[in-house]
Length: 251
Image 1 (cartoon, rainbow, N blue to C red):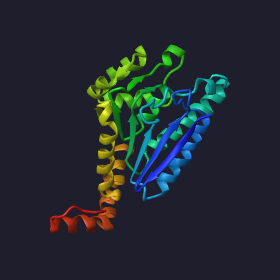
Image 2: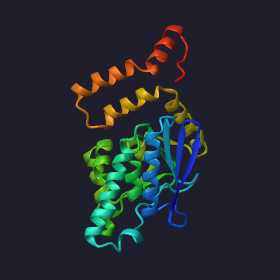
Image 3: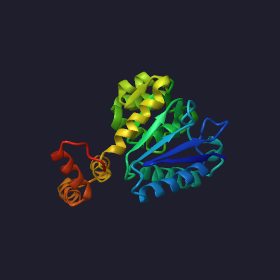
Image 4: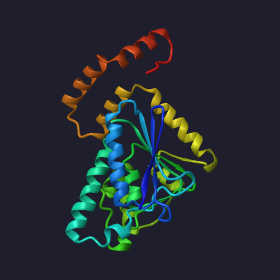
């Protein structure tokens, strides 16, 4: 049985995927724990960034645990595994605060689908990516194909899914699958630098800017409402005052 190891440091919530011996394969307990932590993060405005990762220096996730879903009846599999997983991943993708998937080792199947829900993906040069589902007579059922296509384009997404080929970190960066591919020895430092930048901006502005990009918003209604809410917020006052004083805003 796997678990989600939770760490909190100031405004940053770190969730570590942990399923020893299975390269952090995702089981039902892990999905339920992740769901609970996302609900907590969504409701806690002091959380300004969420980092999802595997154990330092190890795998991110080998995918959905086949021993969990293989025994399920087709109807149960479609409802309780695919349906629930998609609802959970949608909640992760639309989470209020910025999210980062920190990927050091293998990131396969359902693990890659989970990483694709994050706003940003930071990889080490040792990271590897793959959708192996077609070799098992399955498909990436947690919307991994469409999410990948939105990032890298239809042709490359089809190549990755249909060939079940492995993608190295350099190729993933060139494709746009990851935002950066860091040297192994500088991975933690580069990740922390990104987290620091995310937590220095206005949290209210970050949430609304993310919603404008990720959410299915009606621009004609969204932008007037969003700017009205921001303009009347303490963050706007802090930012404008810092601009006039020629100082860095501290939110």
